[in-house]
Image 1 (cartoon, one colour):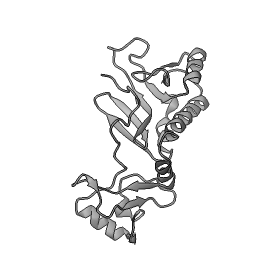
Image 2 (image 1 turned 60 degrees about the horizontal axis):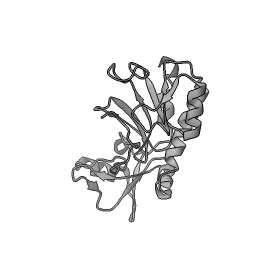
Image 3 (image 1 turned 90 degrees about the vertical axis):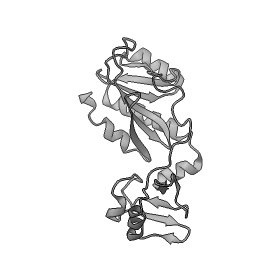
Length: 206
């Protein structure tokens, strides 16, 4: 996978992307709007020989194009533990050109992004994320949203302390100090929680 050392950063630079590790599956998952569009994984020896022990990048793809890619490139396999009609897994130990890998990442992101609601697409493109009360497990009472400053994505981590992000409410925009107070009270900010079923259909080992 060393030849694709740029891959993680490339995926994370796309608007609204969140990355997490699904421990049960041993997958690094990349999601937009709570929907999976990419995963990096290495199936164990108990799986089929074509997948076992390989560093894989799984991406969504147009079904007809997916079949064509598999015929032309031995590194491109039917998606591992996904709907094989519209997901491919790329063997990152192969010699697939960087340009093609980038294109397939872009295509996958776009296919998933286009399925989101127009409202959610707009929020992602504008860098708006919902403010969440971690202690209570619900949205903040004022229904506030936070927006990242120009050049920063709407992701969590240090935003209240740095003063870069503010919370937008019906009453106007809160100052960084107010946001810091909210955080000090035990409330945290994170992206909208994924709804039930917000994964690739049939994704993940049983």
